[in-house]
Length: 439
Image (cartoon, rainbow, N blue to C red; front, side, top):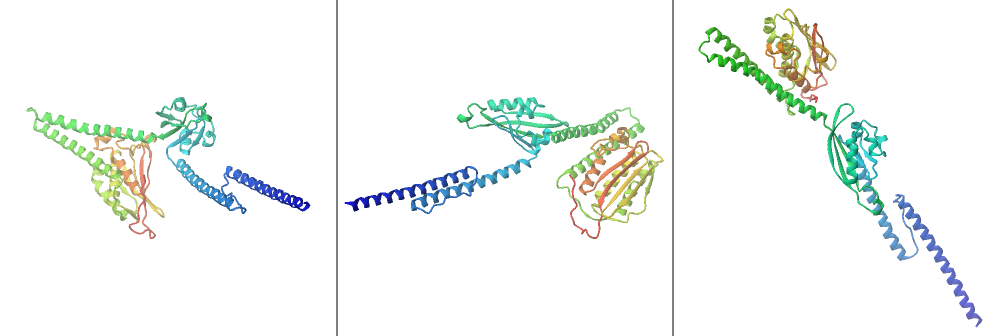
């Protein structure tokens, strides 16, 4: 009987020991699971569950570890997509600002910071009405977007006189009890600098107006002379004078149309240059020969400095056109008895060609505009000489296509010095090498 009691006691003791071991083991695994869960909650997806006890536990833990691995891969993809979106956002030329449902600036790219003239780091986390205090219409539009989902679009003039097209786009927020007391929308603000487009639109309007004006003057003259010639009381001498005027006005219109076509071809993206080694002295001599008679007619002395003795990589016909335009311009704006001189400055990698005159000069406030289409310093003198107002604009485009620089120095009453640069053809530059094109 005693041995049965001893056996039962031994079994009870063994059972208690096994139970205690199982409890300790399970508590240890529960603590391990809790530790791994805390690591996952902090984004440490390299944490793993480990168990070597039971087959069932191994299967469960392997499944959980596989889930953790999938979460880690998904998190990595999300991180890569977020970095890509952030990279794209920061390199957009348009400004983007994200306003959360709490009314705070959560995202802003560098373009938006530049347009708003506000440091990006100082704007993040601020309320939108603080950032847009100087633009109450934007702050009001954001209020309507966040509370009512109303979009908005308008043009703003920011600091520096830059015109910006602003759009407020509401973004619906998934409503949960947590956000029940908050604004039901978030918002994007899109900012786009339209100053350039406005400038181009003004240029287009000015161009149309200028062309219309330039064509209207000779057309009106031709019509007036022609109507007079239709009368019966016009003497032969008057007829001859009127016909001569008609021919002159027709030539003026022809020159204007030719310059417009030339400028249009030069402004196209595929404007072609026939590049080849060009002797600069030959081009200068050819240009001086063509304008010599006109210079003599106006009493202008033409001078050429000592030979350049240099080759340039250029389109010979286009460079000849540049020189002819500059020389003709100098002759027309130089009084009789004046002087026009062509000379070169040669450096290691380029040559600078100067066309100097002793003419009327150009005021400093107009020197930056003389290369604009139809801009004239002396409109009466230009029209009297048959100028179209496009010569210097053509010069600017041709020099730009060659990758050169263009400029001038001038003093009213003393004359002007127009210059342009071309790449010098040296031994380390093979014929056919591309020439950079300036925008």
